[in-house]
Length: 271
Ligand SMILES: Nc1ncnc2c1ncn2[C@@H]1O[C@H](COP(=O)(O)OP(=O)(O)OP(=O)(O)O)[C@@H](O)[C@H]1O
Image (cartoon, protein in one colour):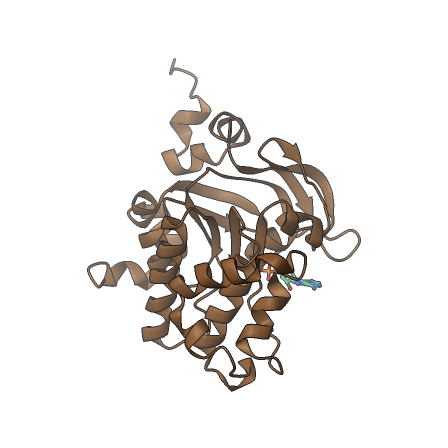
């Protein structure tokens, strides 16, 4: 008679790490964690189904997966923009489930949506002022900080955001979110719609922002590039986490390659 197989034996390491039990163990002491999230837009239709997630202090964590998997919905749920039906979100151990966005901003969570993330009729400077309207006295100090990361923002501070390229707008949006000195930055597809050169620039800036002390959660379609810069990644499928591991481990996991990275795996050596 064969030995009974354990859950661990049946699953790959990346699948096992995504199980609720292992998540609960690994998420101990995390900066931000979500446990068993169920959330959706339309009554009776859940987009997230018992989704688990955590971010440690100092990490960049990427969320990848097929179209419609619920990646953006997860970010919106963490930022209180989609109501939580079940489960919880905690920041440094404090429950922030469904807290309103302006409350989360004061607690150190910044969010950059994928689209319509700047005020086009306002100048760069005015956009950044909007980012810190809750603490206007700190404007100069924070402006200096974000200008170090994005020199464009001070060089062209009087230019209207509507006159900027997509990549430049992305920098304004990220700069605005950084004005409130967040400890966690949620980025929804920051490289979407940008030319390859600007895409790369965005990933380089993310590394710099992270090096400046900001932990980052990034949803990305450019899965391979995202996993290259991330400490850890989650593969989301149908609203739940299917795999989680370090970026390199996910990039080399045969199942993740087959199901989610597709032909990108063939261009593995291209950096
Ligand atoms: N405002 C909304 N109202 C109703 N359904 C929505 C809304 N936004 C998203 N959805 C649905 O939720 C599901 C998940 O969408 P979501 O944008 O989170 O996926 P995603 O993984 O980010 O996909 P993509 O990579 O294509 O952006 C999709 O079926 C989508 O149609």
